[in-house]
Length: 194
Image 1 (cartoon, rainbow, N blue to C red):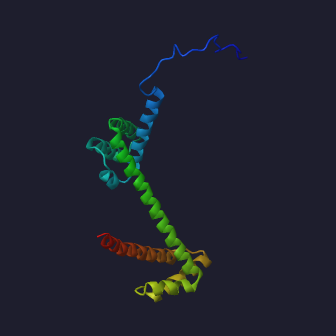
Image 2: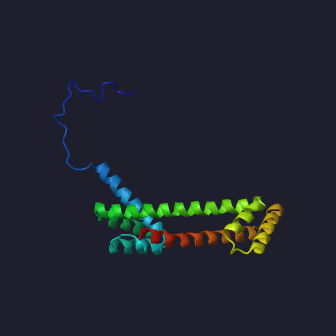
Image 3: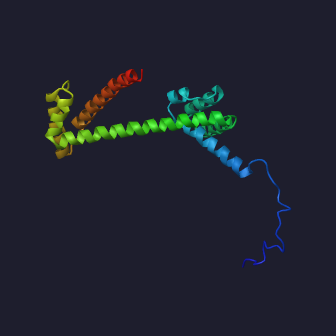
């Protein structure tokens, strides 16, 4: 049974409380944990991204070395070392790294959205013949006969529950078409800026 008088004092004063000019131990630990997690996220990124990241050489080397270690315990120790190196960075360096990491996540979201758009376009092609006509009007360079054959085969694959070979080929054609359109638009935008 809890004591009802526990913690009660006959007077209240702030006379005995100490004022601190620095962050608490808990806050320091939260900050260190956040840097450790950022280091772990960087280790999970592809090598080329890590090489392009705004990192000091010592931190970059520690991350690249950690990516090569396959042994569980060795990797855990190297991750701790990456966290230690991350704690040596100043606030501006950490902010630059975080900004780069956030932009990578945004880039992958844009890529995902583009892939979903290609998938929707493929579904339209399989659902309606008019969608193929529209696509050929916008892109006369496409081989109409090849697309018709792929669409027919993809419909058959779906009906017979076969592996989606033609279905994937349609996706690849649409994906290449989309990337080609993006590349053509970028030089135009640069000319407009001048």
